[in-house]
Image 1: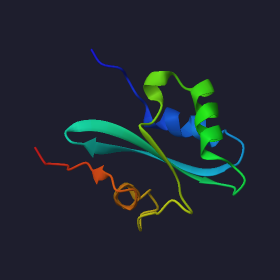
Image 2: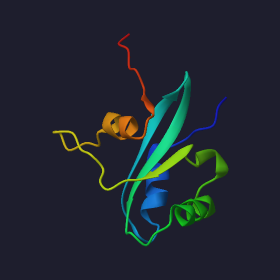
Image 3: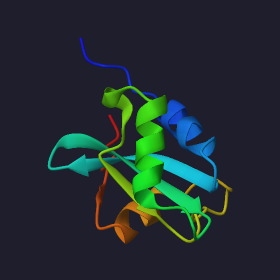
Amino acid sequence: SGIRISLVEITDAFSVISGVSNVATVVFDNDGVLGIATFLVVRSEVLQVDLYRQAREILPASMLPDHMFVVDAIPLLASGKTDDRALLVSAGLKPLVRTRA
């Protein structure tokens, strides 16, 4: 019986904050424990501390990301989907290793 966390809800919460133009929320491997990182493209005058404060007003504590990064752009794959791996590697975080069953 764990806590249900929706990456879409986290992304949506950050996307309504004034000054945020693009958001991606991804899961990373924190030595076998899953972590959540949110990447934001923002206007230059937006402070990261303000983003986190506003997110705390919108999201329950259990859904706040472990890490938050301001980036210049969200990288995309050829398919148009977010390149989660590129985001995580650029932040020094370990991508999930997916195994086939």
